[in-house]
Length: 161
Image (cartoon, rainbow, N blue to C red; front, side, top):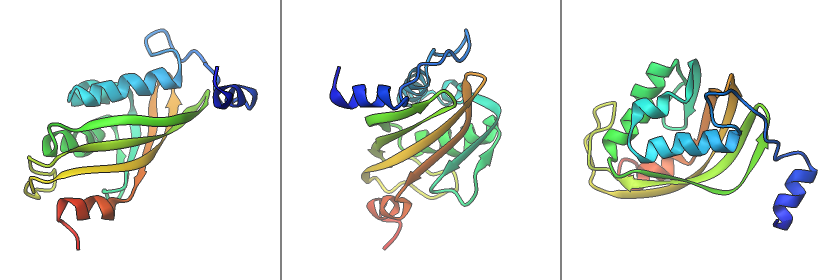
């Protein structure tokens, strides 16, 4: 066991609560399964890890999306359509609690499709790092906040100066 993991266990950051019989057993397992659905480019499966009334904040959107259908259409599917080769990778050691998880990540892909707002593809590759905060309710994602440098992301795509 690494020193960081030992410290996290001592501080109570790595608590493996049972969420429900139908969900992955820990917040880390839930997030890993959710990210696997993203990486399989299956928006419906990814959205299936969310509560019906999920609130999803993404740094590129002016307001959080409310409800699973909105989250699926306006964020998850929008990214998958705009970057069909997108890849979302969890990095570092997550901070875990029985009610949620915070983790760092890298998201990358090539913008070969249109964005949800109609912005045309730029054909440019992008890669950026961020942080996600997830609150869990009933074994599903009830809140997701994706925090990253949206301006830097838009610059990589050539959509901002």
